[in-house]
Image (tube, rainbow over all chains, first blue to last red; front, side, top):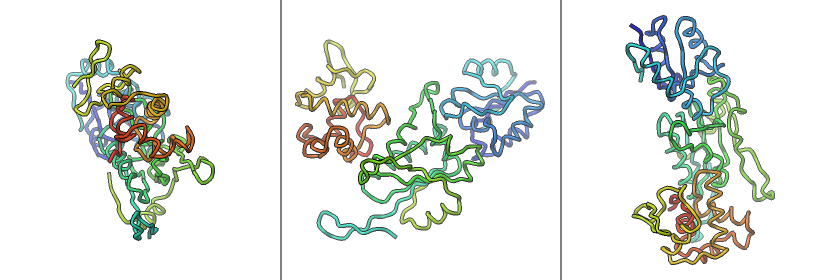
Length: 101
Length: 146
Length: 110
């Protein structure tokens, strides 16, 4: 069974991000939305954890939320941007969605 | 700690040092916008106002914010009006920027105009260490946290 | 509440401020001014246009103190004082002029 994990909290403020990485299995998908999009940027304290996750999982980031925050540059290589249609596609491609709030 | 000034009745009135501390990212929660509104409203009372951005609060000042696709009001241009409201001391914590892979160049360039020097533009943002900011906090009369 | 201009109806809040600032036009400004018992002169337009460009840039309607100072810088010291602005907008330059400019009530309007 495939799971799409969504995270909407800043990795610097809440542990939702770390907990998600602890539970997400190889082959699953992780989508960063709202304040979680800050994790997609290169050179932060959590970028190594994101890079490790990319090794065996797919990591996506919601583009409108990145744009809103003025951070649509210097993203970690391998993090894939999606728009709202991409978000919907991800939810249909996976059997279930787990939202880490 | 703070200056004395005469009010309209000619009595001595102490202006107080107000520090607004911002620790939350914009848009995800309403704290950042609420804080900005309180700072602007508070500025009408002609006190000695400073604003600090630490932790995720530094994200409030990133340049190039575009909220068209999330359907929320982009309030980042309003930070540029702080100078008009005589809010000229804006502190950004260095450690918080570094942790987030940001430099001062990722932030808006905020300035204020010095009327006494023919409206010369001066930088409002000062990047300071946590230790320096702690000293500045210790010198305040009132601290408001968001 | 609604404002009727040239046969079209525009939504306003309970204090008469235009609900959607993107709907603003000059005829609407004239109608809003009329509801405040004001006739728009060039001097009125100067302030209203200034407010609209300030809002465009900073996304807020300035407090009256800020407006006064900024007008003084842009249009000259003789106009950058509250006496001049109150003569144009007797019920408060920020409040009345913002309404006519189609802007929300100023932040920090106390």
